Each structure stands twice: as C-alpha cells, then as structure tokens.
Amino acid sequence: MAVLRSRLGLDSGYLSRLLRSLEEQALITVKPDQRDGRARVVRLTNLGVDQLDELNRRATEAADELLTQLGDVERQQLISTMGRLHGLLRLAAVTVAPADPASEIARHCLTQYAHELRQRFPEGYDDDDLLGPDALTPPHGILLCATEEEQPIGCGAVHMLRSDAGEIRHMWVHPSARRIGVGRRLITALEEQAYGLGARTLCLGTHDVLREAISMYQAPGYAPTHPYAKVAHTHQWYAKTL
Image (cartoon, rainbow, N blue to C red; front, side, top):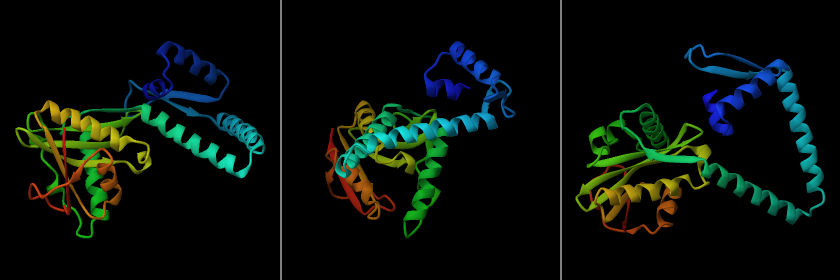
C-alpha cells in the first residue's frame, strides 16, 4: 500500500477509506504481504478486472471518436505531443539522489549496468571492472541512483582523478526509462556533485558501440579530449569544464 499511496499522492487516511469502499464492492482484495507482515497487498478481483477492462474500452472509444475529427497529419502531431507529455510527466516523478555503494539499490543498478555491457561489448565485461565502494564514497567519489515510483531505473558515478578533476563512470538507464531525459538529469546531478567534491573539470570515456551514450554526452557540452587514464573498454574520451 505504501507504493500505491506514493504513486497516487494520497494521504493514508483517504487511501484507506477509498480501498475499503472498493473492497466492499468486491472490486479488490486487501491482504497482508506474506514477505512483510507490516505491509498489505492490494489486488483486483475478477470483477475488478472486468470493470477496469470496461473503463479502458470506453476510454478507447472516446479517444477514437475524437481522433476521427482530425486528419492524418494532425493525428500524428497529437500522438507525438502526447508521447512527449507522457515522458515529461514521468521525468518529473524521477528522483536522483546519492546512494550508499553497498546498498541494495546501488548493487541492483551496478549489476544491471554490468549485465548490459556484457551483452553489448564484443569483448564482454567483467564485474571486476566496476569501481569499488571506496572509490564511490566521498571524498573519493559518489554514486547517484535514479528512482521512479521507488523503483531503481538508473545510476551514474563520479570518481575523483585528482583534487580538481573527476570522471563520470557507470552511467546506466533502464531501457524502459530511456529517451525521456533521465540520463541528462543524472549528468546534471553528477556535475553538481563533482563540483562540490572540488572538480573543475569532468572527464569521461565510452565504448564505440554506445552510440546513444556519445550523443547524450555531447549534448551538454562534453568535447573530445586525449586519453586521461587507463580505463578498460574505452575508445573515445571527452571532457568539460564545470
């Protein structure tokens, strides 16, 4: 219920009354979580599923009726605008915050990062190439994690190379959260954290196959530079003055 309350933005008292009403109508069940006795799990009943399907059907019919009044070009413009709006609303709900490198959320994000690189890099990727907790803890560095509705969807780290320069490492965004601005949000937050750690130059390196990452780094002003350190799986080097 905590996730439901957070997602809907409702106070606990109002949510409890709302759920009680739905339960009395046999639309939902509310039962203790078998994994955590303090939590409760809300599920739709068969009747609740039928009611939801009916509401979705009516909504689809209403939307179709509206769209029939538009030409092909206008429909595509509307669909594109709605997609962009949906992305912005999702981005507004994303939280980016420092994370303990040993925490569950940090381990999850770094594991997903390493797993994706193993799939994409022709040479593979070894977990030993990940920075250790000490390198991601101030003053040596910092790890940020992005969450959406309390679920981890991305991460990025700053590792200090020297007192006035750092590097961005371990940038990852869940595939379902890409192209809505999460990566850019992470980069902005990493720049702020790096500046707070004393960095006035921020560097990064990336692999040739990560074309979308290269575009993401170039957009906020990272420019090609010479290799600044020996980092595995790195073919292109970039830097930016903060």
